Length: 467
Image (cartoon, rainbow, N blue to C red):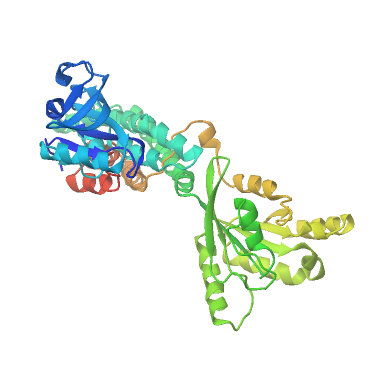
């Protein structure tokens, strides 16, 4: 995992483009690249200052491969914390491969997935949670996921954990010292201050753990299931939300035989809408399978939109109310939005009557719209945003999005609660010291102060090559 090789990889996406960037990192990076570069001004590359850019040609013996710009990063003043060269060449796939093959022949090795960032971690340029945030930043596809990744990469989460760990470590040292003087029955750690610290750590850990509920949906998108009877306009609503013809729309009931999914960004939050097969009794085997999948998708969704036709609801209220109650009873924890579609077919009197009857259905959010006419669709999107607790985002609080961090925080909280019990019960310092050490271990897992090759391998294996 940890080697002294000089590594090379394409740092930009594969394929043809205007330019491509090839990154070389390692102790011999500059010495290795220097004889392959002929500067326009005749300068020798290895004699140039760090953080400078030079125009010239990459040459393979007497053959010119390309005119390039080379950036030099000397010493530890680079992303990886070791000498680094970045070659900006033309984006032809042929040129990219020719330069990389040349570098491999001259002694470089192809970088493994995430190896540049792994070296940055090993060389102390980033801690482990910041390194993981690099992958999140690359994968961010919305304003909010980008904001969270940037906050974590800047060290917001790491700093909070490190501060707690340092305070706890100081008290742990004092308690360990007490064990050396057990026969004298002395206390070096002020128990009142220690209790206050444990209370404060517990509060912070619970806040971070609770933030994962928001962070997880922001990172992965919020799944929203659109359900209802056949031909009520579910596919039309999906198309209106996406602002494109994603789903087939037909007057024939039962057109949607399978679930259709697509994502959009609303207010910086990713929502994954799932258009499901219409729920009804049917003898059609294929349609029955689609209906079964509908209930599976409701299980997976975090928000459910129950779509009904406004005029049909006025004529058969009890039937729809029974169906709505079934969904509410089966999925009591899921927010339910009742949407009356095709409101454009009703006159003013009928609309008022509809609102009165819908208001009687308790525990649900109500919305009137016409998916076909695109009336009320923006209002529905705003309603969906209300289900996302963005208070922590507005306050720029730390939000946990990583499952590994979440698991470590849960384990740390469990150990801290054992310490709390020990203080309240007057347990001896040697027993509390065991739990404190375990809590410190789980804190260290997050920032990488405690790590194994297996853990690092699992984390960086998910990175792209070249990062």
